[in-house]
Length: 271
Image 1 (tube, rainbow, N blue to C red):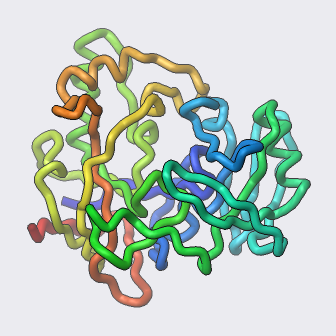
Image 2 (cartoon, rainbow, N blue to C red):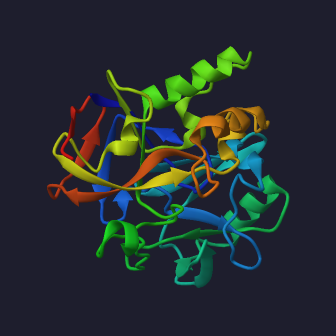
């Protein structure tokens, strides 16, 4: 088994950034989901209600976020550029985030066609991972709940086989927004049974299956929805709680100080 894809999503729910290497820091993959859009009430905004976000590109160069979208000029945004703080909400968590400034808010509001604010989570703000699943001491940024999301290519291939049998086009891994894709000779959904993995020199604990919302039904290139994708997935991936699952959330258990995941790294099952 090996790592076949790596990605970060610097701005929550915006386009992914495919990378050859994924440095890790105290919050998980470096720069992953460190920025987020919030509405007037400070509540997070995602593709669940605003699929147009899939057209927004957010990349990081030398620590600077660069926003780009069709019909809009690129906008560089400096983190830590303002002492202003705003209380924001991500699911059940409330944190104090930094507000980069009015120019970023205006750019993002013009793109989405509604008033939003761009916020940044500094490393000094602690948003702990739910200890019921991961234990104590783990943190994340603006992810839904855990710092790393992992899926296997075999799980995606299995879904595509079912889609194509129904006359639908295959979908790729981008719809599921993982940080890590693992490839190899594996049965579909092998990740369901894994508890610990070693990827290169990094040990991950897989702590909770990833429940799925509407986002995998959204075409990442157009923003168009096709609910048939979830209908087919639901036929064989719905559990007793009524939720749909694909992939595993993970935390770092052991890693060297300069920890980094790389394309092609060998993946070993430890438990």
